[in-house]
Image (cartoon, rainbow, N blue to C red; front, side, top):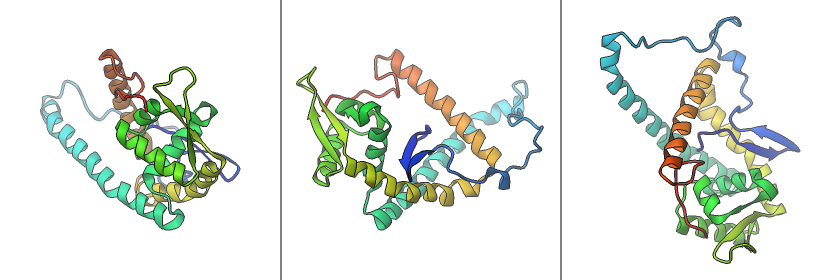
Length: 214
């Protein structure tokens, strides 16, 4: 489950996975003229400053628990409805969003947070199913491209409503629109910090991870 919003092509159009087609007005608890970002942490409040380490650990633990609880449910639902593992869906989604619907194996591994060995195995599995092909890189014989096929796009379009429906049922519908906007904004700041830190450390600047070419 990815933190950033991505585009998913299905049913003849493009849908933003970051906004899961939830009716946010049912969840919003603020008047239309009230700003979303109301400060709830005063920097000079010594009591709140003392609480911050505990709040940070609690929030991090909750994030990990949500990931551990929801991701397996999405995986089960995708496999039951479309015979498509979540790991396959993630690869298809990244390729569909890429220029020319292709990515170097190294870039694909960084995008889906997989090791070189694991992403290579996944591409082989998707290739056997006819959803992805592997092409040599004419500019670098040491690397290769993973390329989305027409069959792969069809599989992605069929699976997208199941995936987005799972996000709504197990995540979005349990929170207000204001909470969803706050979570998205806060996590985007964390991701941006990780990207800057990773780039400064000489790693892949997009997400702070390094990966070898496939």
